[in-house]
Image 1: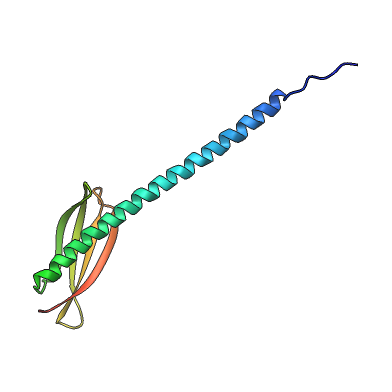
Image 2: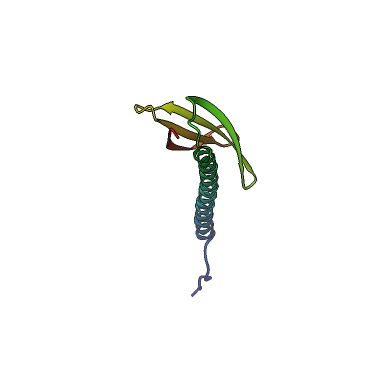
Length: 120
C-alpha cells in the first residue's frame, strides 16, 4: 500500500493566495476612502470657520452691507481658502441676505453659509 503525502496541492495554495490578495486590495481601497473622507471633513470644517468669521465680522461692524459680491481669502490650520460674499436685497428693505461661499485653493466649492443682516 502506498501512502499519499499530506499537505496542500499547488492549486489550493494559489487559490488561497488569490483570496488573500483580493481581501487586501479591498481593505486598501476602504482605507483610502476613509482617508479621503477625513480630508474632506477637515476642509469643510475649516471652510465653516472661515465663513463664520467673515459673517461675524459683518455683524460686529454694524454697517448695512451694500448689494453685490465681494471676494475674501481665509487661512485656517495652514490651509488657504477662497471665498465670496454674495449680498442680495430681501423683500423687506431693512434686511439684506448675505451668503458666504467658501472654496478650496483649486476653486471647488466646499460650503455656503447664509445669514440675514438688519439695518442698524
